[in-house]
Length: 412
Image 1 (tube, rainbow, N blue to C red):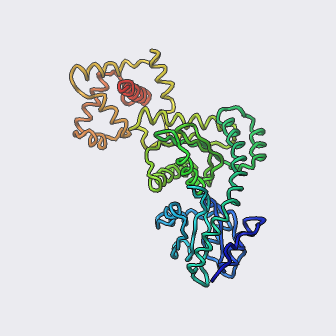
Image 2: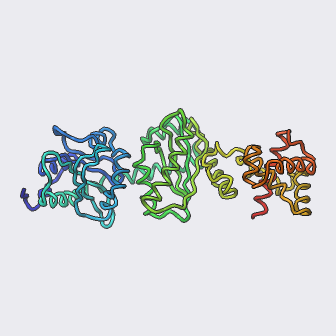
Image 3: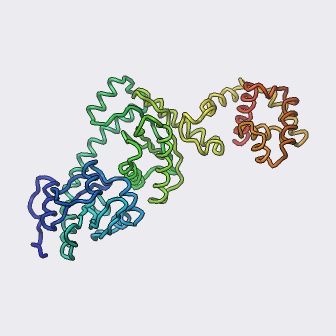
């Protein structure tokens, strides 16, 4: 099929009209997406369209399972590194039929994609050349969308920082701003913080944004940056097990950053999960507390991400401050420390491991590589030397916390 030199020379009132023009020329369904796979235009319906295209049109973005498959097949990495059209074979497990895709470029950056679904015919070499011309012609239209989006995002960023720093605390005023800025709301939310090893560059910001815009595990409401911290206000999809969903999202985010962009040194956390927006500042501070505890007690908190899961570590900052001021003492710990030093024993470590393993004798003995009878003897000596009743939970918890605090102080 031959075309005139520039079939896109005329003006188009919208990207929808532009998509229809490409579709008329190629005789196949067309979709146009932004760089984060959100649908921005599509051609009129034909007699046939595959499930992936249907789902994209309905939800206004490409389904996450389709995006994941395209990454695994190497399709998206190829589109991010070439201006040539790319033929994609059927991926039946995600409902994706044969299609050709081409990237829309601005200088050295991909700002969108055009997808042509091959239905009754396979696109020819001339068709692929036309698709390249369409990508070049689409650039200015897509850029106009980005400019409008960027102006809105500046206002949204300022609003989010007011929430994080407590400059807006009235739930009514917060709701009014959400409505005015057209930010979606949710029945539950939490503040997430992803802390990178170095300050977040513009490239890393785009990579993070890409993952957030394409995820369907969690609803993203707002996000911003603070040097090496990426801060996110997000809502779990359901109210049944929000804590589990938040943990799953963090695990998924870390996996995708590593697999797709080779970034693995990320510390992640989220604050309390709340129902009313005046708690955004509180949730943010709690997320920072989790990161602080993960830095101070990395081994003990390695699998902890949510403030609700911190347990006793929620109070450690306050306890450390009081201990350093000399307001907290534990005579039992002092006696055990003196005994261990004098006799070169490890009673304190024994008690800590015992408590770490929920007072399970067999698991503790296995962890310490000793016989259960030896453990029982040591526990008896701990009670005698420290003059504490190991049947009293209050005394045991107090000793356990003070051991952790002492251990942290000794390592810093």
